[in-house]
Length: 408
Image (cartoon, rainbow, N blue to C red):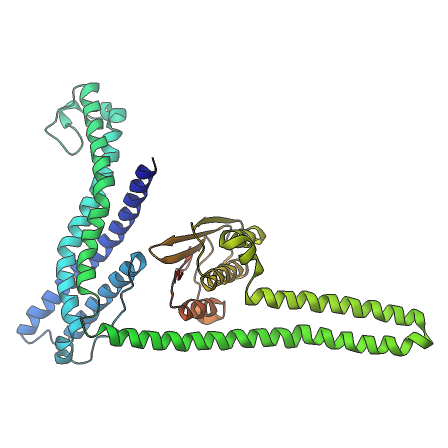
């Protein structure tokens, strides 16, 4: 049964890949047709002005495929904007590889996507056919097989058995079709040999700068919390103790009252200090693990939160802390800004990466530039060489996908 469940889960994941790949393949077909039209008109001398726009369209579609493939496997870096100048762009290796990809994806991506979707849809249609075959004329034939005359229940059940075979084929072949669909992108969209290293160096340089910025921001936050909160409380305790010491001889009752105030101030300072410590590294992660810590966040969230955690083994402490803070800040944003009635949090470990997804049914239109904490989340994620994707159209829903390397 474990094997069957694994195959079914793999086929469902593959179906999701095939749907996304079919979308990018459709866009690739449109970009290819536009590039061919522009190329033909360039031979006539009238399409030169449209050529840069066509190359930018190809780059845009290619970047969407890079982002899609990066979500399901090894990340593929984006090359940046298309070079200025038609001759320079024509010599660019990325442009040549992207033009080859739109050609392959238009053929392979569309074919595998259509077949991958047709198998489960046909399986559902065939399996349910014995329930509604009487609603159609007998000479109409079986669905998709017009020459197969259906005269009774036995023929309808035979179609149902064909549906079971189609379902088994979908479960078995969907992962193969998904890998075949991704093959052109994996082959042509990564940087050419010799270019990958320089791009990786630039990416790591930017990541290091982001890590330093995030570290500085975190230090400022801790310093501000200690200065504005705990330090002021301790100063108040010191002042109150001095006043109590002076009053102990003249007015013992007043001294007792002042000592009570000092004790209250000390307890408040201790509580604020504990809050700062939890902000550095929550002790609940060590005590209960990531699943338990996130369960505490979900349970204390004002908006009803559904939590799903599928992490069989512990990740590195820094990864768990980053995931915890991402979920905590995201839930805070949901409560303050989204107007949502529910929020779903899913965390799973897959192919050496920790995947965190937070989705709410609020009004959407989340913007990182409006100071909603999203910039801080992105900095924290990118500082750990992770990736964050935010989708929040006006009217909702809002979905945040975060990928973190699991470490060891």
